[in-house]
Image 1: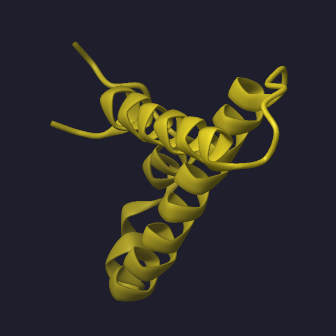
Image 2: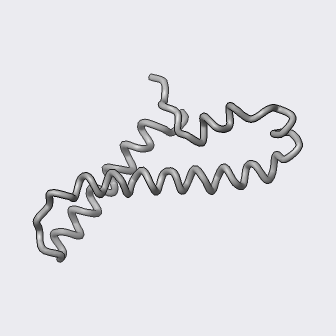
Length: 84
């Protein structure tokens, strides 16, 4: 099964080789930060959708459900976007 590409993955493929060679360490740092931000944004969006129709009062049940959905979101993200 091929993995989907994220925006950061797409961007890297657009960079000319000479730029990658010239600024390798700087590019790696920026890309790692952007991948984490992209993952965080994706998970937050997933959680917003998953919890929007929830009418549990804020408390332990709500927090447990939120934690379960966060685990679910991260697993889905990893299954969909992580490289083997």
